[in-house]
Amino acid sequence: MSFSEEQKQYLAGFTMGHDVARAVSGLPVVSGSVGGLGSSLTIGGGAANLDGQAIPYGPERIAYEAQDAVIAEGKKLCNEEKAKREKNPLDMWDEIISRSDANEFPKGTDVFLHKFHGMFHVAPNQNAYMMRLRIPGGLMHAWQLAGLADLADKSAGGYIDITTRANLQLREIQADQARSVLYGIRELDLISLGSGGDNVRNCTASCLSGIDPDELIETIPLAKRMHHYILNHREVFGLPRKFNIAFDAGGRIASLDDTNDIGFRAARVTEENADTDLSSGVYFQLTLGGITGHKDFARDTGVLLTADEAVEVAGAILRVFVKNGDRTDRKKARLKYVLDDWGFDKFLTVVEEEYGRTLRRVPKDKLTCVDNEDRVAHVGFHSQRQTDCHYVGVVFPVGRMTSDQARHLAAIANEFGNGEIRLTVWQNLIIPNIASADIDAVKARIEACGLDWQATAFQAGLVACTGSAGCKFAGADTKANAMVLARHLESLFELDVPINIHFTGCHHSCAQHYIGDIGLIACKVEQGDDMVDGYHIVLGGGWGARQGIGREIFQSVVFDEIPMLIASLIAHYLEDRKAQESFVDFTRRHSDEELSKVRLATCQS
Image (cartoon, rainbow, N blue to C red; front, side, top):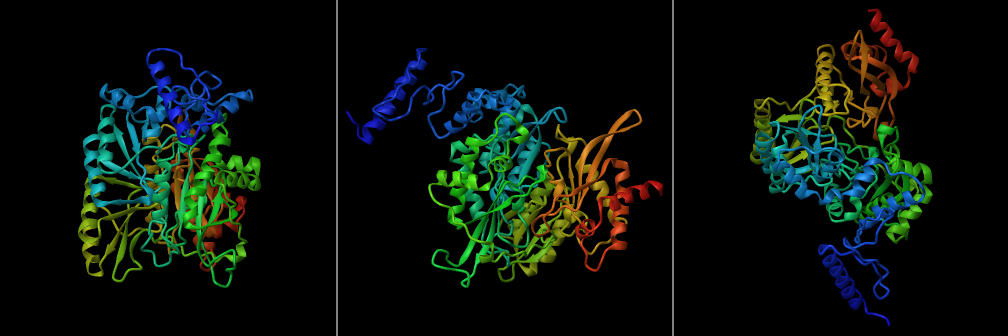
């Protein structure tokens, strides 16, 4: 006997309800196939996996099936995979709220699972939570920033941090305040779900989307579309490890798309290069596998996508990664390693099978790619493409603002702009749509709240992760060290070109030290009987048109020696550089041995 599709759906629902009733009554659940539906139904809607647990019936089952495949091969899941297998982190809301009411922090693997809700217990550095939000494309509104400032005063540390993914964090949240913060952000139309743990992180875009005179296409709408796709597809919360996606419009401020697992970089097909299979217009080049902490940039696939295709193709890539990423070794559980193992041709073939369509391949010579980046466009006042409109990039000391400063900036955005706030990957924010007549007033208001709208060549490119003041992985107080170094260099030099200095606290490379002109990764250095803050130093990194992984030149340098060492390096650059030569080009034309001699000269002096 055959059943119609409607009858099959009815019987499936009836059987699932029957199983739920049996489970609630303490009776065993009977799995079975209904009328050729081809799906086994149990409590939770799925068949039992290899260790006797129910596999979910919905789209998230692919992660459990991937885990089963690992076990079937005789391999062992890593601890994080075991934790996710035993308890679905997305189902922990009541537990998190109850724990807050009991004034308790999580323990054991629950610390990891709480990150899926954006709640990071950062002990032992702080016996507190850090909450990370997810703000697609970095676009938010003044009333949200002001509301976060009030929430930070009430339930966190009284300040807000801007991250290197154009996002925000609240810190120093006590155990009994977790409920307040989780409810508070939702009342501000903000979300933290999936901002930590093994999830797709905040989707970044060109922060000047819609106002950049040089951009090829608006990208913040695409970051928002990707954001909502993620939130409404349960299967993409089953990744083997974290995942980054970025859209770049080819405008003045880079989104650092080439450092992401998936990068979408805008390019144009001109009428001259169009043909019957390829219309003229703006497309996105698909790049894959960026993870600069592992010394790799996203590589071009040769695939060209329309804006309307990008999100669904990203979804197909994510599902392929869920099914095939490494679940035994966290260090190898990123997309890069699937690509290294399979090669791009095999990977794209499997993506096409998942996507259900053939991907468009286009030779690079048919594309017009642009490089309009201005390395100081995120700081100060700049003209928009709209008539008599300007934006201002506000400068922060390594990405931190007090609650009072946040409220002041929100008021400026409301009074002189259109209420928009745009976060950047350079740990600062932009207030757009300021009239020419209001520029002086805005300058005064920014300065009055203890911030600035202009920066030296050192502070404009200064990036620092949280460091040991708030992260258990960090080997040094990166934010404090970064400010000490910047002030020392500012007292000695006035540069006509920016030099990006990136301080990162550990191997996670949140500040992406490998792409800085000067990158520093923290370590502990033995000094007498003590272990003190120190850094390994890399030189010559870059992104976009200057793409390159920095070379490690100095190892285990005590921080107290670093200001003099970096100053000597910059003095050497200024004395020896060729006309208009950038710092990165200077370092790239010198050997490791030549650059390392600077330390010897510094020590001898």
